[in-house]
Length: 226
Length: 302
Image 1 (cartoon, rainbow over the protein chains, first blue to last red):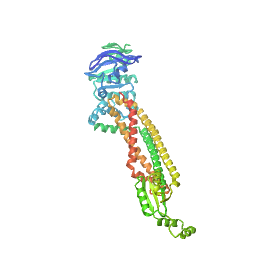
Image 2 (spheres, each protein chain N blue to C red):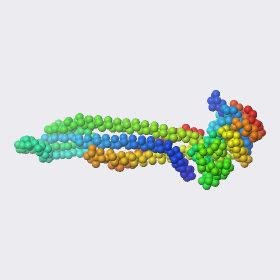
Image 3 (cartoon, rainbow over the protein chains, first blue to last red):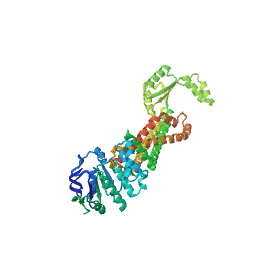
Image 4 (cartoon, one colour):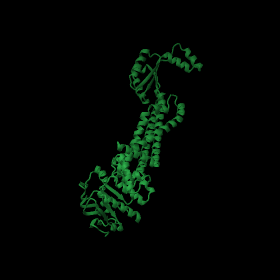
């Protein structure tokens, strides 16, 4: 599914974010990527959605080599990778329904399909009764669920969740992880970038550890070890 | 079609949901257009006033009584051939005499002295009007040749020369000052409008980032801002035209007192409506599109 071969990302001579990273993530895996701040987790995400280009190495999503992806192809790549962030990244001027439907509208989906799909997505994340609310009127957990619904809009093969529980209390964090597990059960590959030891340990799935830009540990059914 | 409809929908939503910013942008554009129209009106009034003064300046050529009709006609033909000459009014000796008598109808002594003469002492008079006051020198030079020396008794240009020069100086200076003011104001307005739109887009920086993350193409992000620019331009132009015509209804009565002709600013704007407001519309549109384009350029970098 995701193949990374010898990837290095250098911002400047004093700032090397990733050093010679190689790994392969199979379709349907649930992988936690852990590491301290500055270990290269965010750069890893940016490379996957082509927000940055690697200085060296190759990145493939399925058969698609995105190492030197063309600018006009980037929107298509991003429609195939669902993104979830710690700060939710919702459009504050749009309602819950509009935030989810927007992801489909930008892709030119027909209105009929949008009116069919969006209620289903809101149903999955349990927000059907909040569809006309604005993000500011929701709790953190609810906002994160909107972000998950939006990330599912294009039925992506991969979901990258960058610290999705970082701003949430334990109960809400647990709810979000349960939703991600449910999505994974349907065959979607999940990449969870997190600091949350409890979450990683409870998952008992593959854990990749980054340290100072190096891949230091790759455990098949691992625990949070830094 | 789906894309265009959605771009239009997002533009209208943005305007409505950011009503404060939209209102400020339109307000600044309206103020800019009103200022431009005020300067434009000053330019039109100045030009009309200068034309009015120029219209009252002409050169009179007084022929001697024995000049003869044939010579006068020949000189008339010669002067008419100059492209600078707008028209020539010729008065024969009798008309000059009648006009003199009418002018001095209250002065009995002058009329008695005139009656003492057994023949008409006046020769014909030629009143020449040129396009520009500066052209008079050329006409006078053309008449100051030895062949005409005995035929022409006097030319009145010398008396007007300094007045004409002053008018020319005032005209060119006024035009330069007004043009300078328009340019200065256009620059200030450009900077104000540019920064207003840039601030409006900067507040939506995060939103633009999110739109990119969910896979919106650059044109899908840029589209609503371009539509908004168009809507702002149309709105500000319509409002400024309405305010301008209200202002003209107050100004025109005063102008009709100053200008004896049928000149009015309302008539001017009515007869130049497409040109004046067309130029303003495309300038404002260019300004808003350029501002939003430049402001978004950074945000749209992948």
